[in-house]
Image (cartoon, rainbow over all chains, first blue to last red):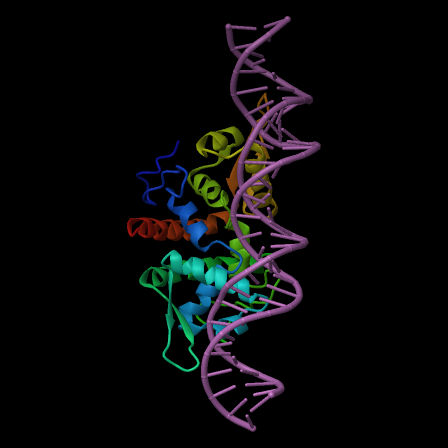
Length: 117
Length: 117
DNA sequence: ATGGGTAGTTACAAAAATGTGCCTTCTTGT
DNA sequence: ACAAGAAGGCACATTTTTGTAACTACCCAT
């Protein structure tokens, strides 16, 4: 068994319940929509309906669901403005910002992948 | 709408059917087991049953399924040896190797994430 | 008072991913 | 002859994720 505790990647116990950082990260961001949502937010904070318009095909239910998940997981934050009517702004937390370079490398790999098909 | 065709990340059309590199990449590698499988293979090629032993909780059916998917997607290759009894070696393709740094950044983010919980 | 924008919710349905348990075929070692 | 390792396959069940359609409530401008 390779040494998951002390190799160049850091720690990976492979024990269940998200004790493996890769499995955990995949769980936190690896869904159909979260990548795109985080990508949008990596450019700037956004209001709910703006995001909805930017993501073709997503429904309100799913968008709200994903946003809630990301919020609970500490990747984004949700802030209601004092405007009338009230608006809701979503933006990355520090943890979310840390994920941006990861997203960037995922994206460039995805592009390379596409160009080889 | 942000310019997905020409920003610092490259191309992201956001049109369906995996025309978005992030969505595509997530689809190719973002499942419960693929991250771990690729992580193992990033260290060295491996035989089927060896992988099975290394991944606690995975079943034969699921492992085979994931390996087939990764193979079809061009991330890994499958090679039967001439041994008796026949063994099957799995290893990363060039595309798979390209994914290793991505995996590495995902992993280090995952570790940071875990330490903040 | 009507339409349109804000940000959702609800009940239900379908699809996708993962899991369970057992069976197979080949081969080598005892 | 029999067990055990290698690499799966098959039928079925469950869980998780996504989707559909309609509905709410608030506010603003015409």
